[in-house]
Image 1 (tube, helix red, strand yellow):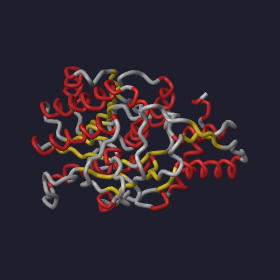
Image 2: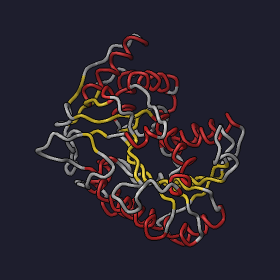
Image 3: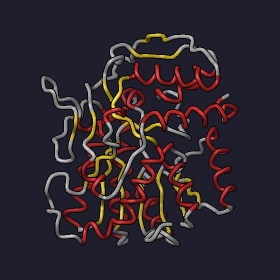
Image 4: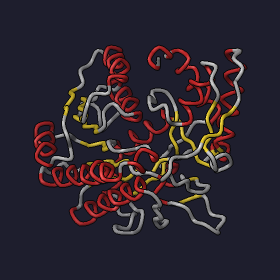
Length: 349
């Protein structure tokens, strides 16, 4: 059971996103009053969303709005007056962002700025902002791949740079206006409820289950990435939300120190740091072992024109681990993820 959040109003932006859907389910399970914002309806996800609501027999307040508009953002926050905001909305696909820089700037920077300022004006003090590990970029000519919260930024593409800007704005609003704002930089998330089939897990699982070749992009075969299971992300968000006021009341942190209100979200397991080829091979193995479906092999495709592939990267999880966080081993997460897609293939036809 939850403590601080129980019976509270919370607001989740990007309410039909991958992380949001899983977070909504956990919050409803614990009698939290959930409000979500949507810029538009994602009809491919509505059935899954409605099934979550029916499962817990609870209502979710849905606000269809453009949070790039400050007045709309202010009015929604004034009406709901949430105890905490989970800011999860934004352009999240690196390749898509590369082709739409202006839209990415508006959705990743203007939207978050509007939330921060409206919350400040309305004395809504608690915010968790979803940043990204991509802002650490690529430390070429070094052996470092395990990034800490106080490492410097090297945003290499439009997605990372826009997230970096909002990351810094969140630090500024925390420091200058004494708002309780925590920033999360997550490893690569996988698991149930990911409807973006351009990502490696849903794409590979669905291709394998339906007898199609798996896809690898040129140059990405051996690059190492840190992976974290979606249920771990949800538990980390709730852990941070439950302790957000206590964290800023604690004088052990140094206000203004680089990374002091930032948390890397990763498992800390070396086995969770894998290449794209490793991921595909694991999925092929488990699909064969559990469903007797033989993979059709791998097809190498060219990357989009402006897509930048950063080098090896992984996250130091010492800070979140000290709060009692324990993650899921990669193989356990993969098995649960494959099972979910197998049972829900109708939603992807």
